[in-house]
Image (cartoon, rainbow, N blue to C red; front, side):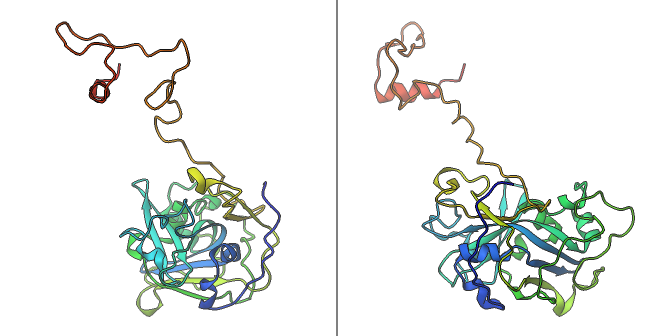
Length: 307
């Protein structure tokens, strides 16, 4: 896997105060952390292997670039809350807000390995063929955890991993291999089962690893961002753990429909000599001749059906 050298910033601080750190410094430190969601169905925990950082008015790839809206309100703080948004008309994506109120910044949770509650994640993600695909991608991760728009703005309880280390992938092969026929072994965390998330135990927890950053951390351009925000030199704000099978594939932004194959000589472009535009014939009796080039003509031409 390609990428820049490991991130070496050491700003580890345990507890909720870490979420007030600079988002670009904090994002790689979430790699190896475990995000856990308890609800009425049970508990699912995901060890994070890929994230992306987003800021506000200086980040053209951010939802907050043009200011607050009803959709991105949670991104403007306070820190320690979820920002969950709907995309492509079918998927939810989960972010952790990490700046004081009024300063938009969030970390998109792009991918991870399910380390607890595998059976429940399988029921939520029936299309996944192997364990590594359960949370490999931001929409899959949200679905496996059972998070959606109802969780937007919800608080996140932040604390250390119980053993002070990042949870490793299960030795049984459930992350990289095919699903077993029976109940998969549980990873770190409390037992899961129907109804266990009821009452005061319900909620989202982020368990942070201690010690220095993982030496496998790599960085590069963010996935699917058009324009300047997708510039990997100015904004190399995607972070992942090298060698992890659950890291999603990098894909640049797809061109907008109709933009990539824009014909030469379309409105706003000059035509090369010898490539003058051919006029469409007008019906007999039409007083607008084929050589009229004014604004009214262009407006009428745009309303003509495509050939």
